[in-house]
Image 1 (cartoon, rainbow, N blue to C red):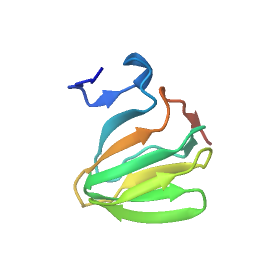
Image 2: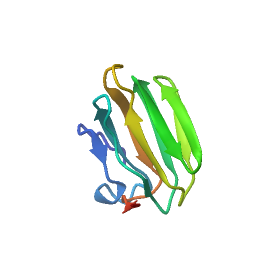
Image 3: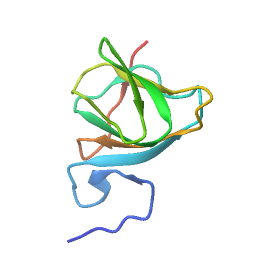
Image 4: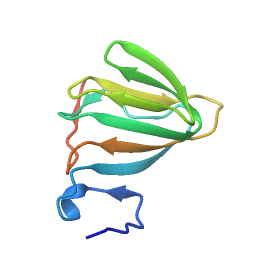
Amino acid sequence: MALHIRNTDLPGDDHGGVPVSFFIQASPPGHGPGPHTHPYAEVFVLHEGTGTFLAGEAIIEASGGSVVVVPPGEVHGFTASPGAGPLRMTCIHVSDHMITEWVE
């Protein structure tokens, strides 16, 4: 059965066990989540804006039109670049529900 979701997020386990979850992120300049991990891969599809991503030991500068993939268990986070407008992207969790462990 096909799904038509009008929200900006989809936890797969709320929709018949779809094996993926996602949400639309809009981070203002200078903001974003701190370091954290997931037991599954996370894929960021950037629509507009720019940001700095931490992915393990790598620092990645990315902008609209880019895709950033973080492997399972890798510490990651991002910050929207100052002065560049909001960073808008779709954050895809390769799991039917989201699990986040924050890293100090």
